[in-house]
Image (tube, rainbow, N blue to C red; front, side, top):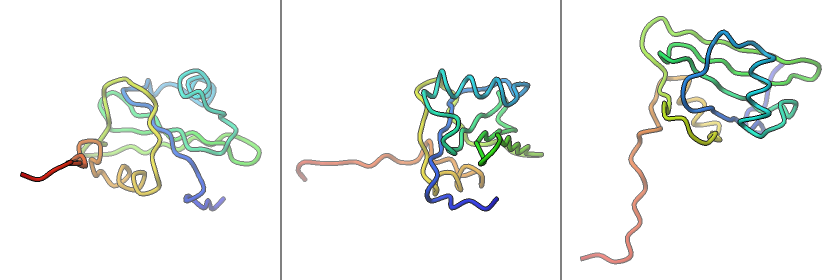
Length: 115
């Protein structure tokens, strides 16, 4: 099925996930840790400890899909500190899959006065 990714929400779980987990176990993580509806059609992204594999779980009309990407070289940029689930936009998803580390990008500064 071809998706209009601009209409899909993307959620990322920081920290490592055991890649032995399959659809049912990842479903439980989505329900209990993401506090999201696994049947919403949103993409839920998980990464392994050495950051060489990611899995994306999503509901597709009549069943779950589990997408796996394994890098032969390099690592995925990934927030390794376990924390709140992050919501990504379409641009950030593309950056993640391309290997661009937007997690450590310069932060926007706001000043109230110039010296």
